[in-house]
Length: 333
Image 1 (cartoon, one colour):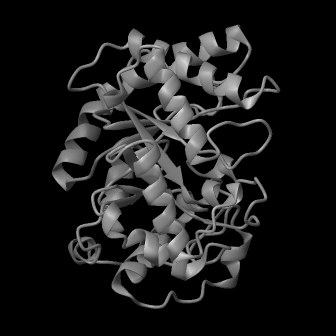
Image 2: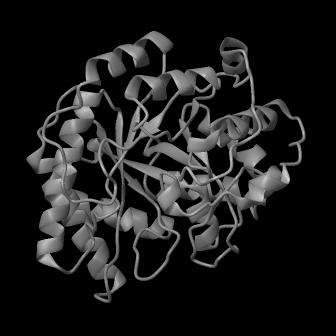
């Protein structure tokens, strides 16, 4: 996200009516905390969201803060006051749990331990992380290394009621990344358990733009049904903790990660409508990582979620929506 993105047309909603229009679904944006932590909660509430995803620190730095921000107590109070949750924290992009480089994996463990501990201070339910790349070592080696590293992370953070779930996000498949298919995600889970991890402390995040880039035909409702059935069969019911809801401006199977406004990309209206209203996903929170959330487009895409759930056709986006970037660095990723 960038202040250079054009501002979205103003959207004004009644927060209570907007929440009711979600029909009990839990949906919210990824928002920046730089303008203020309480302001982020108030913004999410104002656009009719029911949950929120944030970064707890700089997502492109190894350095993690050791003390929580000064606003932390007011932030948590605002979450409780507005009924916003479950809170998700997106971990640093630098983490690579599948790397063949021992030093990089050590740094990844250190960073994720800090993320989980800080997540507890934030009151987060989830800490979501990209799985990284095997860097030429081979997929099977990468899956095992990822599982071993996840076990190390969890071993360093004892379980407790405040400790967030560690959530593993699928990859679009760029480079040598792992976790591209349900089978690969299952292989990482198997490896983590083999190395001593408690599977009850691990969840899965599916990112729709990543799935599309990896080749999943999400514009076909039957393919979505098949994907969810495969996930339950391979990894187990209840393992899907959260969904990153995006359209994609990349081609299906391109192995590219290019987030787009809902209904304006390749996945399109029919696939997204089937997904957000799927009975299997009634209890799974959706987090928007669509473009331009710092410049008002969060409200536009929340409105589009409500249109999808209400069976209404999506209105055409204004021309300036095409100029808003949709790459990973400007969203939750």
